[in-house]
Length: 263
Image (cartoon, rainbow, N blue to C red; front, side):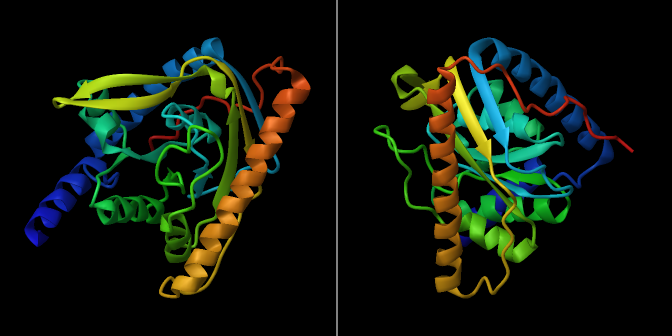
């Protein structure tokens, strides 16, 4: 088991660590911004996006922490920050032909069942190197009937270990438009909870900063609960705004699509 973990960690580091060879870094950036440009064009056509920010995003590395109503969320969360972002994503998506390779090549991190520590370590390295990271505190797609799952402790531990702020994000959408779509991946049928069109509201909260020992489990759990409660409140704000605007608000709050300097 120790050998298997070491092999997985080596593979993950080779695929994800953005401090590797300069030419790989340039390719990663180019692919990321090209993909994000296509994504933004598609999102404007498919969704009635409504993005409200309570405060500007702070400069430097940060943890974007949204709730997770659908499998679609990681792709739309990408548009919240003007810099390159890495997302912790279910490893099954990395096994989809072509698309999975794209996720690897653009710096995202696969979360492998039973090997969550590997994804955690990869995310920590990226934060320490200056990369913004998106992590879904629930650890999985939210319940189909609505609401949020209890939080896992990864976001709390990452913010305590790195000192970067947490940016809570509350997502709300039209649950009647969610589609359960089955896909065969490596001989297994996987069901995705997809949202392909319709109103999609995100409320971005003010930065949350925490101090204390990551070894104090009670403190870590308390921070995790504080973060998830703030996310839930922001999701309620998104829901109320969606009702008030009757799904007619135009796309707002998107940052300028401007790649980082390659210097």
